[in-house]
Each structure stands twice: as C-alpha cells, then as structure tokens.
Length: 244
Length: 233
Image (cartoon, rainbow over all chains, first blue to last red; front, side, top):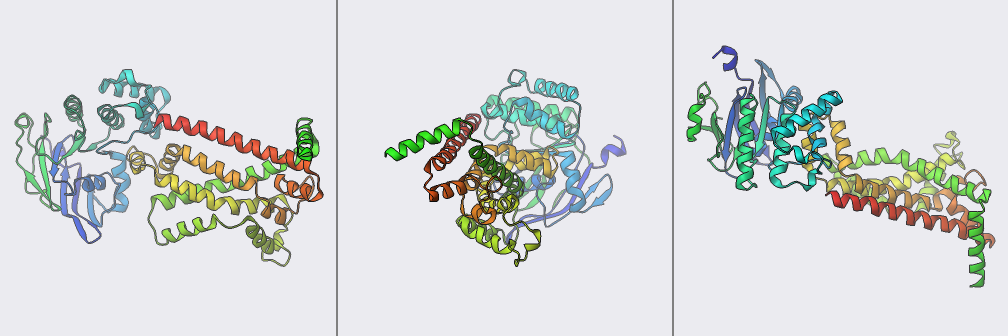
C-alpha cells in the first residue's frame, strides 16, 4: 500500500455541535480514506444525521477543522468543497417532481455536461440500478425501494468521492434491502467512499471496512463483527485515533 | 329589472361589437395590473423564500407586518402614495401623479404583501429535503432556489392569481393615483365607478362582465394547474 493511499482524503477534527444548551457532538474527529465503507451506528438521537449533514456541508457546526490533502481549512472555506465532493442521501430520499431520468440528470446538468453525455450517463445509472424500464415514470409514483435506488443512482452519476447514506434501508422490505446492499457494495468496488448509518449494529451483507459508534456525542471505533469484512483489508491507522 | 336586462343586452353588444373606448379601458387595466404583478412578484417571492427558509432577527415581526398589510384598504394605499407623490410630497419631483406609473406603484404596494404572505405559506410547507438535496447534488444556492420554486409552483401560481385578482379589481388606489383620465389612466374599476355615477349602466355592466369572466377563467385555469399538481404528488 502506497503512502498516498494511507493518507486520509479528508480529515475532520474537533467537531463540536450544540443545539441550544444540548451538546449533540463533542470534539469528534474522523479520518476518511478513499473508497472506504464505514458503518456508523448509534441510538436514535445520538447525532448520526447531524454528523452526516455537517460532513455534507449542509449544517454549520460551532467548531470544526477540516483538512483536505494536507491543507487545513475552516468551515467557511470547507463547505463548498464538501458539497462538491460529497453526496448526502436522506433517510427517505427526496426526488424532485419529474421523471426518474430528469432526477438522475439533475446534478449532471449542474456539471455543465453536454446533452448526449448526460443522456449516456443517465442510461448508465439506470442500468446500474436495474430500473431502465422506469426511466420516464414520474418519481412520485415509485415505491420506497425504487426511490432509494434512484437516489443512489442520482448521486452515483456525479461520481462523488464520498456518499453519506442515512439509514438507507430502514424503511425497506427485505428484497429492496438486498438490492440496496448490492448497490452499496458496488459503490465500494468503484472506489466511492460510503458512510452508512444505522441504529442497529448489523449491516446486512455490506463489506464494512470500519465500524464507528456514536454515544452521547462521542465517537468510538468498534471491532468489526461482520465476518464478510474479514475478506476486506482493514483500514490502517491507529484505531484509537478516531475517538472523539 | 327591465333596465337591468336592457343594460346587460347593451353591455354584451358593446363587448362583442369591439367598442374601441371600452376595449381601451380593458387594455389599460390589464397592462397596468400585469406590469405591477411582474415588478412585484420576483422580490415578493424572494422575500417569502428568505422568510420561509432562513432564521434571522426580526423574521417573525416581518411575517406579522406582511400579514397585517394584507388588510390595508386600497384607498389608504392610494392616499398615502398621493401625499408622497403630490408636488409638496417627498417624491413630488418624480412627477408621477396621475400617470400609469403611479397606478402601477399603488398596485405593487397592494399586491406585494399578499404575494409575500401566500408565497411564504406555500414555501413554508415545501419539503426541506428538496433544498438540501439540490445543494448536495451540486446546485448553487440560486439554482437550488429555482428548484424549490419549481417544486412549489402550483402554490406560487395560486399566489400570483390571487395577487392579480386583488389589483385588477381595486378602485381606490387607481382612482387617486391615476386620476381616471380617459385613454390613459382609466381602467375597469374606475370606469365602472364613473359610469355608474353618470347613470350609464351598460358600459359599467360590460366592464363588470369582463372582470367576472376573467375571474372565472383564472379560477378554472388555476384549478386545472393545481389538479395536475395533485396528480403528480
């Protein structure tokens, strides 16, 4: 493994987030490696969603320090970079009013891609989620599982460095869950990092590289329990480093 | 009753015979009100968006002020602007009194609070995830705003229709600021008031019919648009 792959793509240090008098996140630090699949667990209200929203550049914390490629940045300089590089998916993803294709094309249009290139990318994304037959269907007519898949494809089409999935399977049936797990594993194969939150320690058939746990605003690293993870090379670094 | 039916018959004749004086009044009315709406709507919708999506000191007070402004009578707006635009007033140098621009200004003042209040109610009920989703998919804040407006378009169209209805039919402000000058500032409501005071009901009824048809048309169109919106939800 080269030194480059060992260096975290994104370092977040000393993150503190307060809501009123309540401390939601307390001096949380986190290193994110390229293409890493991280399971983030914690009880309801433990701050998982808040952490993801901060990482996605959508929520301003009271205190944080980011480091991209060795360069330290304050929030003011960071949030645009975070929004460019990271995609956040809500627990129940929001699809814009319009067809499935239009939804997937939304972010691509912002990247000023040509019409043909967008069309090709949309077709590729639909193939990825096996929903080619629903390309022209209005997004509001989709089932929960289909919506989740379209939202993943929409984010995937943008080739983000990191995708933040906020309890993506919590409202899905068994079959839809398996489809989503397969999709998430494919993201990892394509070197797209994923942080996957769950209030349960099990992560289905996901090939987890790292398991982090939030408890009362503090983060700890947990040993991997998923046996499938054994086939995946464990992410280097001091496991205690990510303790907040 | 006989007078009413005779006047109504004459009104229809005036409308369908293409009476130029009548259609000039209708043209002025629509021209002034559409321009007022076009000028007021962007800022009103932006204001509504800021009030709905961002928290800042005085936000609640602003919402209360706009809601209160909904009930200000047109004649009070007309009087206030009349004082300001009259020669001795602070804006007297603009020489706007008794012009279409003055009428437009009055109508902007009338429809602005209504547009803000209705657009605010619409935008406040939109799903916050839409805004965040747009941003996380790489949209600039301006692009994300346009996305939100698209998502809320049916409610916003309703606000525009209500705003238009408020100003096309108001008489107080237009009378005071426009002066009811024939072929220049005489619009439908001021013409109705004038014709009625002269006892010439036919023209008044004809103009009233235009307002009624317009209201009916706008409501049917709005119903159609919102019906499509409901289907796509």
